[in-house]
Amino acid sequence: MEKFLRNPASFLMLMAKKLDVKFFGYYPEYNCKECSNYYECGGTTHRDEDGSIKALLASYGDRIHVSLVNVFSEDMKNYPEVADCIKKNGLRVPIVTVSGNIRLCGSESTQDAIKQVIDSELNKGPLSFLGRRS
Image 1 (tube, one colour):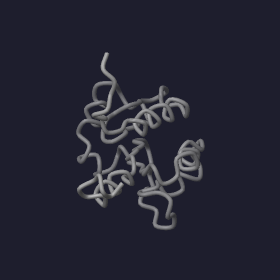
Image 2: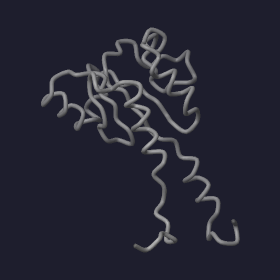
Image 3: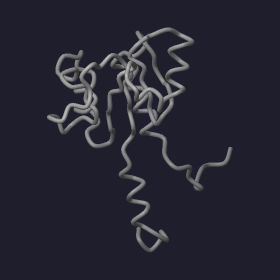
């Protein structure tokens, strides 16, 4: 493979990049320092929630990066598109973003729907120049 790629190290880094999945909701104790599997894990929220985050990590492992964002925190100023979604649709949580794009909101954020979105994002790859002609 190395003889075909100009910079194989950068290609491998692109392949190893994790898919960013964020859950926006009410997480009053986020920024827990005791848990290494979550970034801004929601404090004890990850223990009390319905299991969707644990199930995602069990299914996708190192291919995804999961974080929780409290919609009532100062962090929301970094997510104006999510704040606009809340203003437009009301506080329908969780709001799920994948790679920075709002994908699911409220009751449509089921475990199966989240997995479908993640699967479709993970299956997106670089376009091949070897594609078939119609």
